Length: 80
Ligand SMILES: [Zn+2]
Image (cartoon, rainbow, N blue to C red; front, side, top):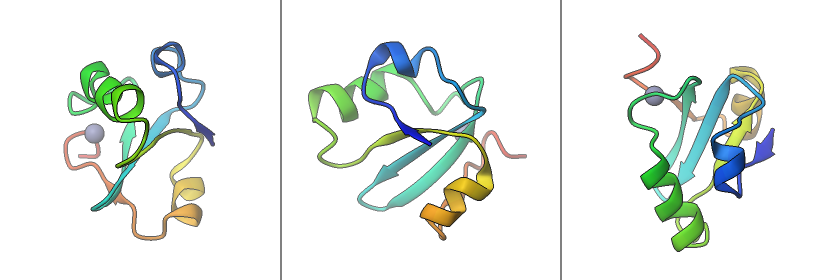
């Protein structure tokens, strides 16, 4: 798991999942990116707001994400 801090990393992910944390919880998405995971949202949360309300992570497996965030939600759009 690697925290995503740059647009270059966001656009060149190493692993097949992306986890997003925020004040209401955490969600995990499949790569290639789900339509709910956009560059605009990434830039707003990570670049403009300096991760104050949440972070993005490049994640190797769902199990890895569940170890860190036991209540992480599978995105209802890309996990169907
Ligand atoms: Zn998704």
